[in-house]
Amino acid sequence: QVQLVESGGGLVRPGGSLRLSCAASEFTFSNYAMGWYRQPPGKECELVATITSTDGRTNYGDSVKGRFTISGDTAKNTAYLQMNSLKPEDTAEYYCNLFRMGPYNSVDVGSGACWGQGTQVTVSS
Image 1 (tube, rainbow, N blue to C red):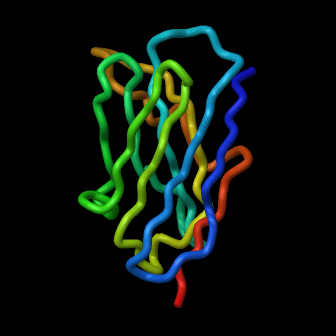
Image 2 (image 1 turned 120 degrees about the horizontal axis):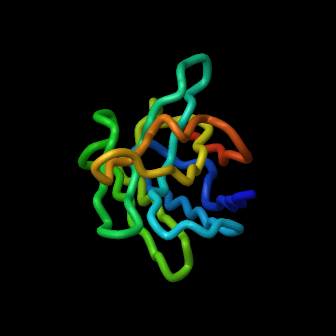
């Protein structure tokens, strides 16, 4: 069973930065993607960002484009989410995911969700 270990959440003031990390283990497939979903208090789960293992293609949710950057280290099966210019509306539980790949080497975002350990990010003054 896939193991995902997250770190890096916390409390930050508006305009500040945080970096999340997620290390994946206990899986054997070589073509995959990693990324994050998040769930703000009282709101629905939303996709934040994904990155593919083979070619490093990235994808971002509209609300974080230009502020968040996802990167990966395939040798370590680890993904990073650099979050800059944080806003109070970024407050949420962030969930790291390992995604399957779909047709035409697309990321099957439906294979991820707001589940698992999660890490809390709170943006507040």
